[in-house]
Amino acid sequence: MIINATSIGRNPSGIGRHSLSISLYFLEHWDYPFQLFINKHALVHFENAKNKDKIKVISGAVSPDFGFRGHFLRFLWANKLSLQNKKKLIFNTSPTEGSLFRCKQIITVYDIIPLLFSRNYKKQCFYYKYILSNILKNSVRILTVSENSKNSIINYYTIPKEKIDVIYCGIIEYFINPKINFTKQNYILYVGRLSPIKNIEGLVKSFDLLINKHKLDLRLKLTVKNGDLNLKINNETRRKIDFVGDVSEIELLDLYKNASLLVLPSFHEGFGLPPLEAAASGCPLVVSNVASLPEIYGDAAYYVDPYDAEHIAEGMYKVLTDNELRTKLIQNGFVRVKMYREEISAKKHIKIFEKVLNLS
Image 1: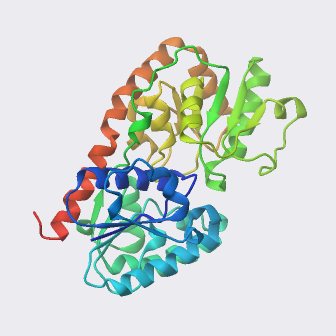
Image 2 (image 1 turned 90 degrees about the vertical axis):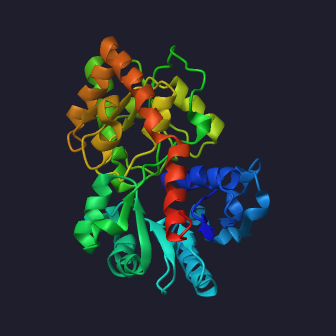
């Protein structure tokens, strides 16, 4: 069997983090003979991995760190891989690696955001509309990360529901049960990539409303780079925003532990992993009331309308100032996190692999 985890980059996003989590588990706990393909940029995450003889390293040029060029080269490489291994089961950890050729493949599709918001994702929309549809037809199983995403895939691609399995993402163990810091620093945190769907500009506008209306001494930390956003705010508010850029796992854990609040104001999410990592660190959550987020977070988050900046601002204010609510969200977060351990996710993957391989 082949596991294609080339979607992991040097600074992985949600898809890369999930791929990394289950890949490390497979290496340590699954005895079946398989080859795990990663790109050179991902090597830093496998320095302490078990059974390194199962790892095959390819060119870093296919890394998602290079954006569209990396995705395109990775797609071409994945199709070559499938042609060379027609008789082997291939698991592609993200939709970008799917093969157009008939082969024994399983593929994970996290969401169909490029189809739902096609104006913002013209290149991706073409891929999802014309290429991924054929890849899914050629797949023996399709995995996705929420019931919401499963329903979207069924409705758009007219895929039989029996062909799709929902496996929730797992949190990398590094983020589970750290030493909780209950003396928080005065900042609100956003963790994620820069994308129109993430509604970062809406978050900035809400932050501006929050600190000016309620006169709060707060900062906003964003894991994006300065200059990437067109911020229509006054200079005083701008000075209270920190663009921390790409961060290491150590730095990210520190951000989670010390944040007063994590906000995910997305217009759509297939899963939404950062809030789970934050919840494991004792950080209360404010997230959008759309798509899969209520399914994933249940009573562990305070929900806001992502299209209403004032509603986001008031939601943040309520969680920041209502101590009873904060305590409840934090405690519910600890409970919720237990549902999303990487071991649970990885074992469900293995069960499906073994079923397709006729091992069970």
